[in-house]
Length: 161
Length: 161
DNA sequence: TTAGATGCAAACCTTTTGCAACCTG
DNA sequence: CAGGTTGCAAAAGGTTTGCATCTAA
Image (cartoon, rainbow over all chains, first blue to last red; front, top):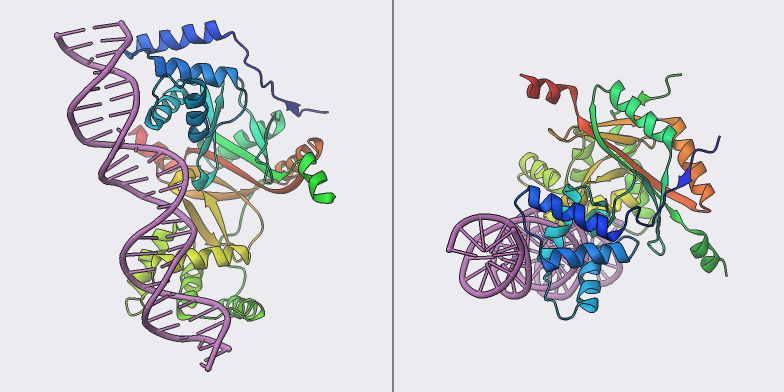
């Protein structure tokens, strides 16, 4: 009866494949492949986890001091990648969004309110239930977002001592 | 097998009772009962639905032209009311939050992406499932948020014609 | 009388945008 | 070379904060 499962967090495809897909997408839309776009994709591929645009910006600056990259380009590229279905984001209210390489199935998040750690899960029963609820209300479902907030095991230990 | 239900949206208690509770709360914390706080609570009581601080600000200005009320007070009071458990909020990412009089049970939201309409529902099975998932990850669950986005029946009709 | 509350404006933060300079195709 | 892209700085939204003034208790 156990339907919950950890979602695979390592990239499912090789960087070369991902890069090729990205280039094809750009070409098909008359857009250009730039060093900045490559570095952003590459950085997301190499570092698993969730990043705010600001965090990604600092990481890229640090790892690529030679390439000038503005924060605006980070934002523009993340939007581009999200529209393309290559990255996904979680919203944290006024505190902004976090992005991750999203070449994986839909999943929900469980977030530690102490350390900010984000874990992922997928539950078939909840997914189905949401579709059913949308249908009951006569809604045409487009998307959904489920976040569980709590304190992770590590932070519980820290608080205990 | 139908567990979904519409959540009651009209206030569960009389305004007098609510006001008394609010005054007691303020007194117990050494805080003061001001005209602005009264007007904010009263406006929320009289208008069911979800409001952004800005919307509430404009509504209050319009209905109470004689009382000068700054937007900062709206924000401060909504935070106060939320901490006190009198109102609840839904977050809309960078677009801010919407508040509603929250003297009612926990519920989730289904939101129309065309017209912004917000409906509420409660599903026992989903609630239980979330608790179970938190437990599986060793999390001490504090809160959760489930939002379903889609197009409401009315907006579907508009699009069709 | 006095601690707490208010309005105003400035400050904050995240995100977006206008634009001249700069690349990619 | 043309049109998309970039960095920069300014602007935009939503929210918070500092402070002198005001007011409930």
